[in-house]
Length: 181
Image (cartoon, rainbow, N blue to C red; front, side):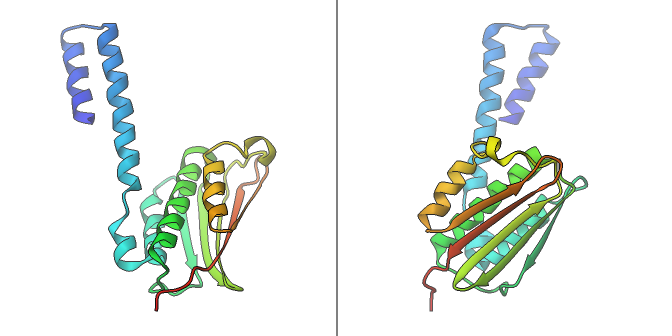
């Protein structure tokens, strides 16, 4: 898709052509490109299937870290611990989506992901040192309602603590699923 858009741009620049049809085609190519990227991100990462949630989340932090933001990972749960597949997948995608929100919206330099088990619950805390937001106003934004609904299906809780210029803390608490033996 990227290369099709590139060829179209080169052609229109070389021939000095600009029309509604070409403009619309460029928009469609961009939209399809973004959609494909999102779909590929949604495909179950092989790391998750092979090595489990803890390992895959640690890898997610490494992959999302770059020169402008660092994702630090800490887990009180052993890396080799496995949960039922559906639970691992849902938690991975929720965490991935929250990381994307931090990258896109927070202007944070540092984010921390902390995992632990307590009182038969899986606890996931994500905090960042970004610009924060008024939770009353923004609760509906950033796909948070979709995430809240997914967590509700697991009979879990989802809490956001944020204020402008004061970073954001997201706390997720989900009852542990029955384990594989």
